[in-house]
Image (cartoon, rainbow, N blue to C red; front, side):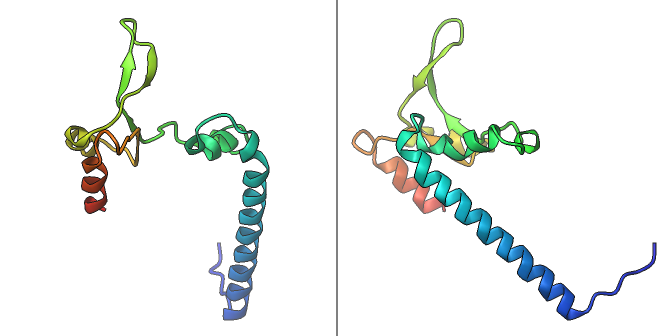
Length: 120
């Protein structure tokens, strides 16, 4: 394959076209979000995952939600719900690859949020 040479104008045209497409996609997503959010019955943190998971891009997703959730489980390992995270959970949260965590209740333990914010 021969080396291709690109002049500055063609590279700038490509970059401009790409930016315009990204802007259009952002507008479409924002419009869709505004239209669907009032009727969406799941937690907001799962909105975009649900949209993408049910789209043509579903096969490109990594099946790791990267969330730290400490939960209530039955004896046969059925998840019943998330427990409130506290300062005692911070070390455990940091040991994994989670980028998100839930759930926090500042009335029960506000220090956990302060600790995490200082780590940012």
